[in-house]
Length: 131
Image (tube, rainbow, N blue to C red; front, side, top):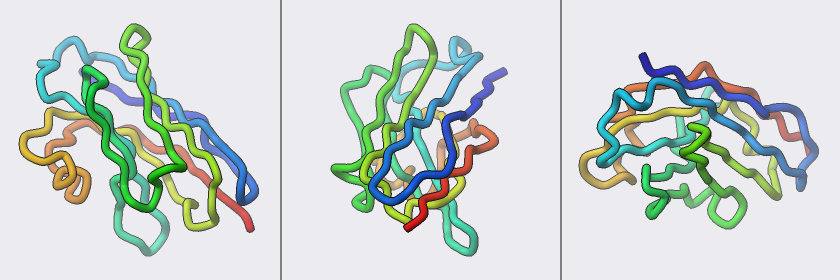
């Protein structure tokens, strides 16, 4: 059984940084080909947004335009961890952040918009950025 547990959220002032962590278990059950882990966020009253994703080998990544140059996704496969380093945070980054995993078929950009193929989700960690 795959489980994803996020941590690292909190409150920070604009311009500050946070690092989110996602601890994954049960991934050995999943075919690693086309396997991606991603971060999504959802603010109250807004649609879910795919923020960043990383392919299992680490060779490919995806970033939403809204976070390019500010957020960095990374992974430690030996520890089954995925991280989201968030720098230069803005109030509009305030949201619940979710870690997700799945085998992606087709453009990852489409999967990040729809959430399709992401079969496993964590419970989320809250990020609040004040101005």
